[in-house]
Image (cartoon, rainbow, N blue to C red):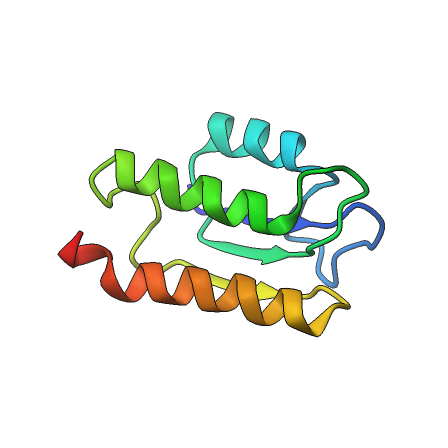
Length: 104
């Protein structure tokens, strides 16, 4: 069943249909239990050494290990971090991976 993830250590999601993870570890736990979300919105700074980028990289590694079948092909995402450079870097990495994963 499709579900949506909101990764942020402080802010509440803008919609009620998002499952909130307050840390990288919490996000990995819920993704491990429910499978990859159909949508995710990432904050960068999570108040721990792990960041939203850590989760983006974990998703890519998991998808690569699963032959490109873990992240749904209709997966969408946003990066809502206050830090513009972080939003740009997370988006660039995930967009690049998703656009080239069929050739990996």
